[in-house]
Length: 339
Image (cartoon, rainbow, N blue to C red):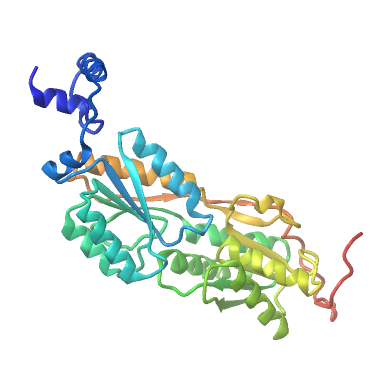
């Protein structure tokens, strides 16, 4: 048996080229000899490793946990391990990470940190490393992507609160640097153009960040300014949780006085009091589909660019309810909590 055959049989990324009978025979001999493949030497020789690089904007955001887990599970089936790094929402750090991962001869990249017109996209293309964007689509003609249909999703949230009788609705958005922010705002505006939205008032408030503290700050600010809206739609669950904290602190009942929605349907949103109505964006599906797409690109670099859009759906819980009567002047006065 030729040494190259044994090498392929012991390499998870190439053993599919050899019959399973031969692979089992070689593995048995290798086990008897106590042989362990030297992956470092192999990567230096082939300039390719059994590693997939994954870059997310934050490791502390619970949104990315299911995405990371499902990517790891899927690529492991093809013999790869995952090297995860966080860009901390910094463009220069993303460039540095991609350069370093390229130096480690990663077999492919999955990036959740791309912003629109991101210079790191060109870096990925020049490196020749198969790359897939997940969650955030850089809208580049040569980069495949897997994302949620945020436009349809947020429009559905608008329709949900309209059907509950809300006529004054506000949306909290982060800066519009990423496709997710732009698409969700577009979905909000599309909802405002619906026939059933005629005569309604729609406002947009810009947040500085994506977290709970920012949601709390913004809600306090809106209440202090005399908030008239009866429904608040937040860019994500973390902002919505912050809003809920501020409402409770001010003695404002949700959803009796203000309805509230989030996006992503993170773990434990059903355990809040009241449980959060949220747009379920299926993080595990995003991760699996992006990994599946990357595996096919690694197998065939000449594959055409693909754009995969997954459909979110609303999980209606306890933070949305019928709009309060419009003639109640004391609508936002604190109410006594139920015993």
